Image (cartoon, rainbow, N blue to C red; front, side):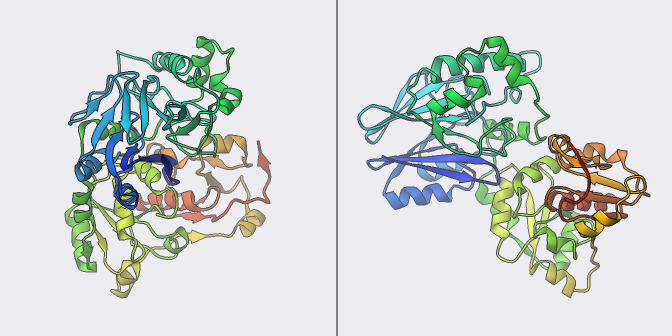
Length: 457
């Protein structure tokens, strides 16, 4: 038996590959399915099942393309109603894979169709469980992403989750390995550990949601307290995962069109496209296409695209480092952005060489800013999340979270000079690029946290 976790840091997402005696299973695959095909080919195995723990909200799964490429059967747990051919397993049903078996445990709560898959080894011993968003290390899945107005509340879902954990998961042996769907950094939970696998026994000891003496009411209160609004793309990705989507091969065919400077400009105007610059932030601030938006592919690219570009059908042109074009298209598709229409051939250097107009963002070093800063005469925007700001912030800074920049932009004065900072410079450059594209010209980026200034906790 072979079990491999395939973790994607940008999305804090874990897919899984299980292989036994020539047969394999993939659990919660990403949309670019080549790595799973390569694993199966290397082991001489046939992918028999694609198991989905639920209709994901934070990424578009690769279940459809993987099933099409391999002939594997897509499996969901009880109550799932996908708009495509799939096998809906029964609670406690056992699926055979080579010499091992996988037991289907219906664990509603995060969503109603949420399912945990319990892997048993060749001797029939419970070995590991793949919990999706039902149980994380240190946390449980948030119960507010699948609310149906007038039908179910987050408190209802939290109650179902309490029952699922107590009746299906906690009775299992302490040595069963917990393989969750996400790790720290995902918006699908609140207190996730940085670890990506652990034992159920440790979770019973240290996970607040698995306290043995916790009442149902206490559980519901704890898991529903402190929830922030999910990123705007979450419900849209959930719909795609349930209803179906365009093959990633078609997305690649459209997005990987190399456009000359002239063709790029024509597409920008004719298609009313958004231009996305995915280079490193230090390169972007020194020169970029006027009106383009920065979201660097080396950072948390896909989640920020999903949070900030509100229309999944928005035509997108992009600028990137030469050789990273396919990576950009795949990472856009992972969160449902299926309408890239091409990239600037030769990158930013081709634009500059053609004599086209170039914009920049002013910067001031952290030490210089610390010496000069006067909170009474200067507008300093801290674009980190509210929780980060509340934990510690520069005295006199105004919290303006990047997550909600589109909603809160009306609070700003275009005539006032503004200085922006975050924790390391990535998010502040994203914010500055968006503000620049909306007509805010008096901007200065502080490329690192100003540590020598007074802070408030």
